[in-house]
Image (tube, rainbow, N blue to C red; front, side, top):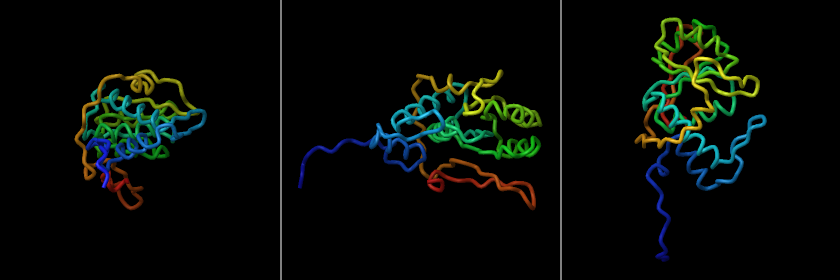
Length: 202
């Protein structure tokens, strides 16, 4: 039996959480292309590093582990990065269908207790209208997209948050912790939030 020293793997890499799955892939295949969206392409290592910086940037503007962060945005590279960043820092993602009306979005914001709402510039007006309808939303994050990339006044800019160099504190997440709340369509009553753990998403 070989007595050669084995590489040490941190407990965080052994966990089964959404962001840890990305970290394991980045360690195993750092130079392999991982994300392609329009003209944007990142290797797994580049994407993993971006996710950590974005998580630190979000922490810097007050997002904490366990906070509900609503996301009203179209698919984009920014959406993907935010999804993993929230998981890495221990915040809970609340995706919202961008086809909903302002009052329907507002109901989900209130029910989830979201204080941060991420959107893209193409949906910024809908996001602001919904947030104004007696919700707890205190701040916005503007995500980049292929069709709408210009920043929006009064919203945290994705690129500025993702440039953060602060250290991200260890979240102590476990696979049974809440990762996401997905709301039903509400065809027979008001939408209900299905609470999904990291295990359930994976």
